Length: 306
Image (tube, rainbow, N blue to C red; front, side):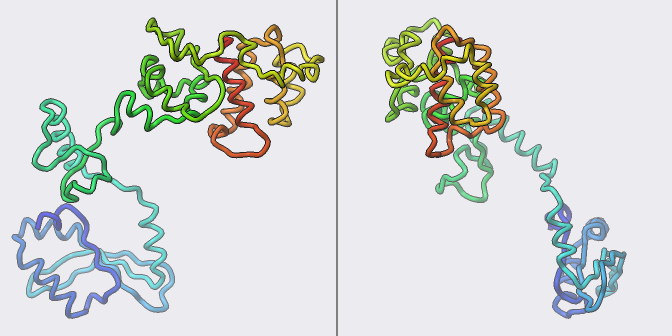
């Protein structure tokens, strides 16, 4: 009967005078000693339908169950949506007692690496885990480079050059330059932003450097180089951006036409930061105007310059 003591009991949709309801209540209270019976009073709620009623009435109510008087809260209404909307507005809570149990079991697992009798450690979608057991995933389900390959796609890696998201996820620069690097960019064409991570590690990664542009001009395609006259009137990233930013695909395309001497890393960073502030997932959106491609090219340029 412990469950009856810890959680509210709500009868809904039946008349309190229904004989079946009364029999259920009699069976419940007959099992309880007086101390438990008193606790039951605080948790018993009866919701009753009343035709033609406007609004909702909440009041104390008592019922005689074979000589034992059960006090409860009676909710009376016609429109049950009033009740459902109120319940939907409530935030879910986990009892402190349950949290303490979680804490004890997790602590035991961390110290001993052995699951307890009530807890197994596995992904929540593991079909072999008994649903009656507490199942906990601590940290990432796949850790290290394997986890990085699973959790991080190329778009996040590009965005990280500007926003430092992977550092906050506790991945090291060595992990980001290891095997997972090639997995993330498999099937993509062009150079990738790697200088941020290469500059922060003493480990040599010859295969990564082999795939990295060695010069600024190495980042820029021959087609773009031929069209640099289109931006000859602009002297800086900031000037071009202020003039063209209302047309984002055009602005991000033209910025890459600027020669190296007209770039300042801080100005380019300000542009990229503004783009991601307006739309964090812009690299994942598929458009016909080449916007994501333009932005990735600018990130490679910023990575090289910085």
